[in-house]
Each structure stands twice: as C-alpha cells, then as structure tokens.
Amino acid sequence: MNIGRLITFEGGEGAGKSTQARLLADALEPHTGEVVRTREPGGTHSAEAVRRLLVEGDTGRWQPVTEVLLHYAARSEHVHDLIRPALSRGAWIVCDRFADSTLAYQGYGLGVDHQLIAEIDRLVLQGLCPDLTFVLDLPAELGLARATRRAGGEERYESMPLGLHQRLRNGFLEIAAAHPDRCVVIDATADPESVHREIWDATAKRFGLPV
Ligand code: TMP
Image 1: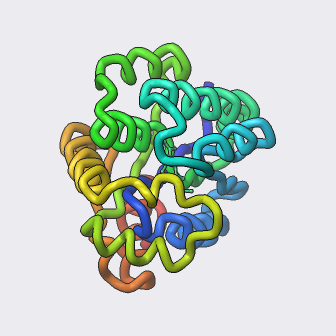
Image 2 (image 1 turned 60 degrees about the vertical axis):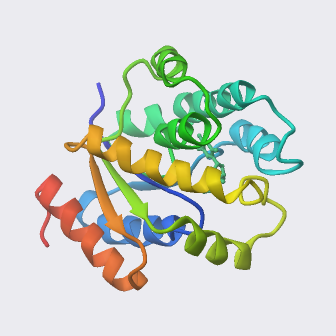
Image 3 (image 1 turned 30 degrees about the vertical axis):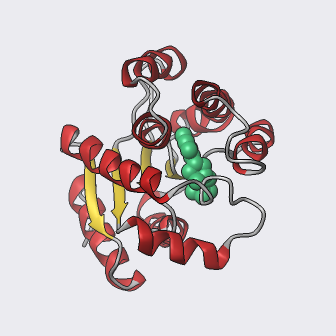
C-alpha cells in the first residue's frame, strides 16, 4: 500500500520545472518528513544510463515508438528501484517529469498512437499515478529561448522543430483538461517566486497543509 505521495512537474522546454521542483521539495519537508526529489528520464543509476540514449545525439536516431519504449524502460527502473519503495515508506516524492511527458512528447509531438502509449503505461505502471501534477505552461518559443541558454550536451529534444514543441504544449494542456482532479496548470511566464507561491498554495490546499 502506498502511504507516501507522488507530485509531478510537467511542461515543455525551459518552463522552470527543476527550479520549482526544488522550491516545492524544500517547502514540503518541514510539514511532511522525508521528501525525495527525482527526475525522468533518469532518477536511478540504470535509468540515467537510458536517459543518455534519449537526450543526446541526432534528433532522428530513434523511431518514435522506440523512444516510447526507451522512456518506459527508464521509468520501469525508476519506479521499481526508487518510487515504489519511497512511497511504501511514506516519503513524499517530487518528480521532474513523469508519464505525461511521454504522451505529450512522443504522442502529441512525435505522433505515436495515444492508445499504444496508454497500453504500455498500463503494463509498466500497473495503475501507479501521481497524486498531483503541475503543468508549467508557456509559449514554446519563449521556453526554447530560455532552454537554449542553459543547454549543455543534452539538446536532442530542444533541437527538434518548433512545430513539435507547439504540439506538445497543446498536448499538456489537453492532458490537464482531461484530468482536472489531478492536474493544475500554472502560468510559467511569471517570476519564479510568484510561480512557487501559486504551486505552494495549490499543494497546501490539496493536502491540507498550512498555507
Ligand atoms: P528534461 O530536460 O526535463 O531533463 O527532460 C529531458 C528531455 O526528455 C526533455 O526534452 C523532454 C524529454 N522527455 C520525453 O520526450 N519523454 C518523456 O517521457 C520524458 C520523461 C522526457
């Protein structure tokens, strides 16, 4: 039985997810006890090895469906080795990207059949689903301009065409609209401190923590 909580951050490139995940994890700790901050693709030794196959190299190095399988291979390791054990001991997990990224990037962005992704998700995750998901939303052009400034050898997705980034932004918004109980869309164009306040307010409200 899961007694911890899984909170995920989603969004396109340059939305500030890593900064917000760190700020939320720091804010949670005094109220919740153990907080584990992690990311996808990656989060464990084996999943980080798969990450390198995905974020480095030529944009066209994989068939889109192969990319789905690689992301779920990394996720399978991450869930088995880190997420499920942490949830079982009551930790709160703050994860920078999770399964919604596969539907947005490989589904909406690269055109992989959504039903196929849903089937793979069911087989690998066996119903595991975040308790709360923040979708950090901003125009694709702005996010890419921000991301390019900090890129360092992991630019494979950032190098993909603007149209793909616009489609996946729309994908994240559709996913959020389809799961209103789980997802909160946040305007990521605001300054990081205001974005954090909005995220903290929504988290506190959802889990009955002091605002
Ligand atoms: P990051 O830049 O947030 O660390 O994520 C690495 C890249 O991986 C990012 O460009 C989005 C991409 N990605 C997918 O395409 N599908 C996925 O399922 C995940 C988790 C990430």
